[in-house]
Length: 286
Image 1 (cartoon, rainbow, N blue to C red):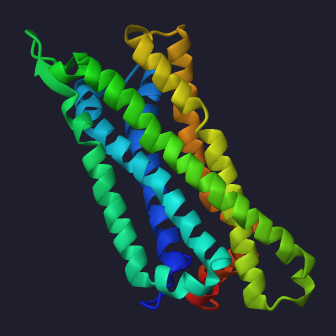
Image 2 (image 1 turned 90 degrees about the vertical axis):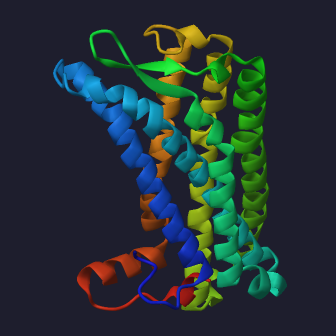
């Protein structure tokens, strides 16, 4: 809550808070679904975890996929908003108003939820003869339309191709503006320097985002081609799946630290909040 101290929250502050919340949810779901499983595998304990594991994968995994998609499009949204402020400054007041930003976020939430609805019906939990729960795939997972139409084509389009294309375009334009600003940084006001640092931080966030997303498309393609070996230790899809998960969560964990390291204004306000010496001025993040 570094950038939000009262109701007069700027559009960028709302988006940064949204990104922080979504990143936290991504990490929390990963910790409950993957990290605990890995810990149990290493220690050889956690017998009770095997009883709840099917439920986690059947019902928590779709939520994680939805939140991960929200994280991806949150990066697009915050980059677009900054792009408008820097490159379309004449239209920024209209396009980046609090109301417009909140509407865009609501539309994004609804889209991510609707897009991931099929994932909520992929798996379900059944009970064995001995009373132990186990995962079972629904009939939809055997459909070629679902495998190649939804899991491959639409996923690549919605999660990788479109968002990566947009953020790369916005970032290139922002980087061009940064180069111009650097030439006259000494003449900038304190507010202008904060805006410059915020833009620079966002460029770094996008670069990390693009790098961390490179492995996941390969993993999904291999999983579609070799679905039976995805969870087999030693297979190529297995290792791509592990690295894809690690990089996605590293991306969510790194955003806060990038803003702290690269954004002098953000770091100053964080220190002020922690020390209770001052209040945040959201207008500096416009």
